[in-house]
Length: 142
Image (cartoon, rainbow, N blue to C red; front, side, top):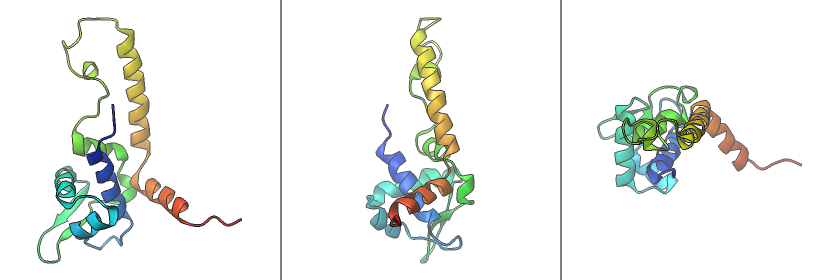
């Protein structure tokens, strides 16, 4: 299991939007350049995020993207699932008849691990990540 570049870039793109004024429509090229993400790849990621209702796409000369709702209402889990679909660390947890073992201790272990990971992804919202980012970027007073 590995966090994909698409998920990473999607979160960084959403964080960039969350740091903008709520009414600002941000061009994809600005996000791409600021976050050092290939623009075509980010466009594909943002297409998924738009379809899922995480962000809004604005067409036209002054087009771009904005958050579809407040950052406090957008979880990391929502972003990950918008990009890759239902999150699963093992196929046997969500696909019937893939494993012949009925009482598998490995499946129990994987299920517990997935529950813990998805709980963290659900608890962390974009506004929380923005605050964490501010803490890292601001100089610490002694």
